[in-house]
Length: 599
Image 1 (cartoon, one colour):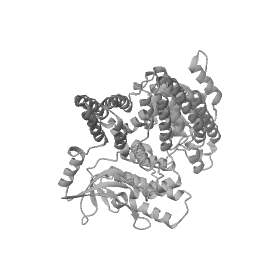
Image 2 (cartoon, helix red, strand yellow; image 1 turned 180 degrees about the vertical axis):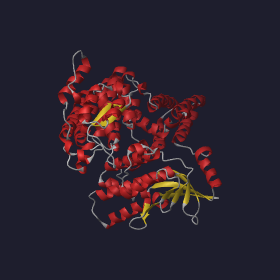
Image 3 (cartoon, helix red, strand yellow; image 1 turned 135 degrees about the vertical axis):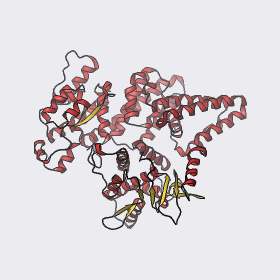
Image 4 (cartoon, rainbow, N blue to C red; image 1 turned 90 degrees about the vertical axis):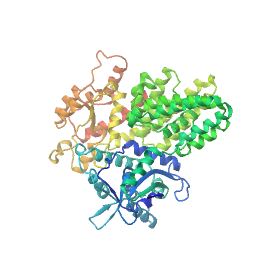
């Protein structure tokens, strides 16, 4: 009635598929891509193992199909998200392999051919057939454009939800690939083709396929790492103190329920990811998700029942904090620095920092305030210096391990904390200048030339660092001072010579400004002189500064210091050309470095 087999990705994509019109739209987002790349880094030691020799395999999940070898294409009942994402990844890889200065050898050309074969094939010079036919057509246009041209020309406001998700995912994939060197990209390509596997179930008809789907997703759920770990810990307790078993099971189940409470729907926590972050934060060891059970098995060999109960208490406590932070309760770590935690986890989405919040969950309120600010500074410099995630994880592991080892003696806790402060501060100093250079020179735009989310996030960070954290919950837009759509007849008024130069300047940080939604909508197509009046009405300090010097009369304390700093390091403008964009880009990048230093 059905056939199930494990296939490598390159084998899966030797077939053609149809997505029927009853399927939901494309739902992957930026965070799904980042988690996938994080998992792949874990499995391959930062994309450095030899792809042909490594025994490591990455299991991507199940797909359920209708059909057999005599009735192609196969109909996809479950798995369209994975299949579509894989095709987007290979399209982005192909572009990377073309644009990089990699020697044009026979093996390189063969690799390029293999990559393109994954997502489709050219029937002739003008007709390209992708391997999936989408019957409901909701996002076929953007996929066809990405696969043939590498970009989609539709404006953001005209995109459907699935199209926006495809664009966001593709941009994130490109960003992840651009953070890798040539050898890492080649390794990843081979690893995805040969070592990344799917369990493929082929059913003869919809009735059988649906029963398989229900079994996989509801009734027949396999044991995951947490179930195996639970059984391992119970076995230790039962061998020593049977009467502790019920108490342990109750606490363990409470921990799991805290993370996976169904009422939160999309905010259910991945328990394996939680355990990975827990191990880094509490034990100072970075363990890949596939090796978590092995780690627990090893560390508990010398534990007794009392040790196990202490561990489950720690897990339960950390799960509560983790779930709160994951669901947007950012004051769960520190009441007074919830904005810093929100920026780190909510805006930047830098999940590696969960480990540090768990590590310092019992520190004093005063210490937590300093720790929250240091974590934000650390995260900001990592992001804008474009430091690879695996490098960041190794640093976090190192700093957590140093703190844990130094604080084993209570008398040394102050020393351990100061050493952590020192390590983070030194790392921030190292990456700060690199981040400053990137901010000054970067074009914050996606493949379509539209504003990239990194630019939006940088402006939100500057809101916080310049004393406007209370406005973070407001509807703040990003305003392009020189409009993002500009008639060629107006190029000269901005000192722009042609379209290429316009695209080079429009999304630089110097041309971007945060602005309240009502002011932005009313002035988006105004001249610069008209926009200045809107900036003057803004409550946002760095925006108001463009129109005039900020008044320090009746200002005291931190607010006065911020006004003085903005007046000193940034300018007011009466005209706006590409020269002013360059000048303000320099000012904003320098301001970033100063604010990170002072914060």
